[in-house]
Amino acid sequence: MIGLFWIDRDGCWLGAPAGAEGTGVRLTDEGLTPVGTPAGDALSWTGMERMTVPDAPARSGFRRGLRTAIDVATSIAGFGGPDSGHRMTVSVTHTGGRSEYAVLSAAAPAYTEREVELSQRLLARFVAGELRPSVLTDWWRSAGSRPAPKPPEREAVLERLLARPARP
Figure: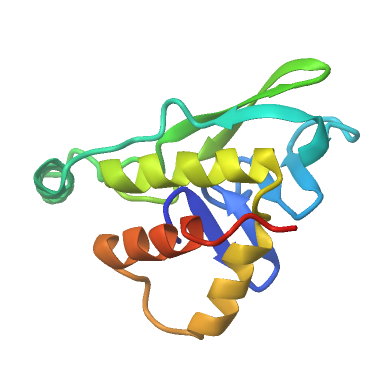
């Protein structure tokens, strides 16, 4: 996971991959494909005007640590554990109007505020045609199989991707 993006050998997702709930948004160099919606809902980057995730859970390091401590304490006390994931909304403005898709956050309990801001900027560059999601899958392949990066490293990866020149 890097920012709001889940990357694996099969590609890139916005938020967590489609799981038991059957919803998700796959990002490709051609556009986005929502999972769990009627066929034909795919959108190309050229038809998009704007894409954001307005309700991505973002917390400071202190607040993320506090949330984790509360989840552990409630689990130990027998009151259940952490929830299965924060639901987020992918909001897309396109030539046909506006669409919203439900996805789950891949971050427990939240992303850093900087990760969310950098991810939103990367989405804007995808929509503008300056970069494609393959920059994320290329990074994943070059990073090899290693443990999930910590927030500062994830932010650094996003910053490096954003520093890339616009594609021709």
